[in-house]
Length: 449
Image 1 (cartoon, one colour):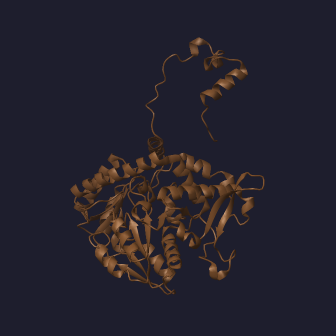
Image 2 (cartoon, one colour):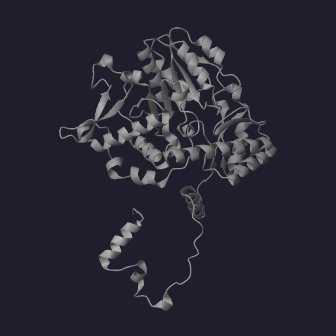
Image 3 (spheres, helix red, strand yellow):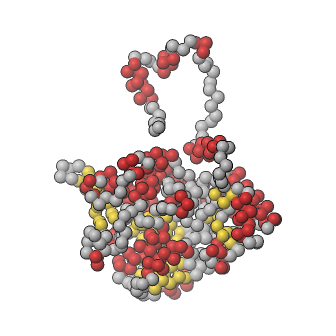
């Protein structure tokens, strides 16, 4: 059952209603010799994350299931989810609602989407956000289509080779039978090659797609990259880690035109890979080509605040040739969870999650370096980093798994050049003991493989 603590005013009102002056009077019927007259031995207060971990440890004693400590990343992350997210998002009016085709009859859904759009715009510094998309990969592809339509260029879309390989694959699929050429520019030392990208940005380039932090965990020189795109008249499309925006510059500060993100880390569980949440926000000049839905605020005939679907850019609403995409719905429940998460965490909470993730990731990188896994690309990173493995990564990861850890992602599946590399992510959930345990597991695995 739901539980909400009573405030002092609530307690006073209830005592007044029954004619008592203190809570102690409620126990007058209990003989004094049976009352507890000593302080309760209650341990110091814990944060929600610490309490969840403590209870989880007690529960684990009764379970035989795989409960490996998660250091996986590559676009999906084991961040902490406050209990309030599940409590509110699982309410029936949210959990069973669907796309607001009859918008005026869906005021609650529309208001929730409007709040989501507002929070995303504040988070990214962009002027407007849509109601969400399918996932981070489709958001990158839709952003590129939007840039093409706005810039009226269809020659090429330039993509940094340090963008998530699955996002690049989705983009190629979207554009395979359209006019633009997708030009992928290989990275250099784990980051985008600025000179090579500048050379690839021809006068007919519609967009430059980059990622911050990039797929390998490194921080890009986003200001220079966005400036290069701007000089060539191309849109700067930046895919971000939303948690990182609690610590790093907002995309508006370095000149991004369109911002995309995978919103899974904002209050959504890993869920074996989906469904996830695509985020898309942009400057106002791109608004008319924004795919999906945009909810706006207005007043009804009685002057009361209400919400409407301001833009509906699907072919069922407007002329087919004017439609911007086939996005017919949005990941409404996941967007709602992201909204609750952001509202509950607030700027200070998001910064705390980002700082803890960054500090713990750097501690882990040092510990793993001492265990025999040096950084593959030295340089600044956020919460994810790539290490070189002196032995077969697949065999080493199996041994690490037997020790109780999901130790990372072998990168050879995406790139032969990274066949000896492992990508490791560290979030605020990981403890010093878990990180030290991971380093020890790797040390043992390297000695036994």
